[in-house]
Amino acid sequence: MSCGGDTYRKVRLELPTYSTLHPDEFQEVFLTDFLIVNAPEGFDLNQELAAFFVPEIERRLSLPVSAQRIGLEDEESIRRPDFWQALAPGFPRRLYVTGKAELTREIRKSILGEVPGEDPFTPQRKIAERTLFSLSLHLFLIQGDNGKILLDRDFKETKTYTNPDQRTDFAFHDLAMRIKTKLFRLISDEERIQERYLLLK
Image 1 (cartoon, rainbow, N blue to C red):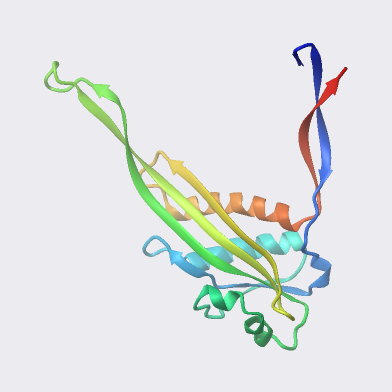
Image 2: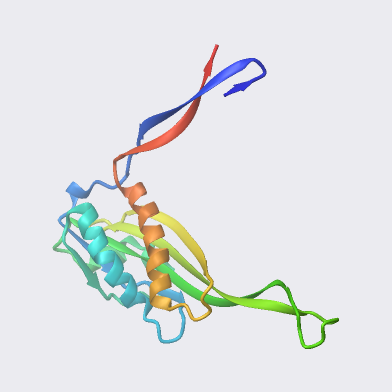
């Protein structure tokens, strides 16, 4: 590639990433119930979060992971070190995964074009319904012995489905997979491939 007489070459680099989380400092992980902001009727978002993330985190960190309901009442509790210290005073090497969660489902209509109607001089608009799902997670990773917040991050993923009757559990899984990928990039030391351009004189 050239621009104004200069020549560029695209290269792929392996760039290391560094995490503030060191799994070898912990013996176990507890995924707590989340503060649920909103969820579709009849969909147990806390149950689905546990079913998805417990095995995923266990595989990624190579630590035993359990789901634990602790009855979170507000975000203030999450940010209080003494709240976490009181949960397991005899287990100093415990990591908590907690936060706030919201899953929304919305039907949207869009005009695809016009089609002939009964009156050839009055075409009718063709309208399609699509389902929009959004999953928002405000995730905290908390060190159990001192209540220190190791990670405080917002994640949000949205996906539109052409099926107006798209199942909520399937949509949740799609969106949770995206968030999992971004989360694991933050908590894992690994090399990531990135593309760069080198200027050749």
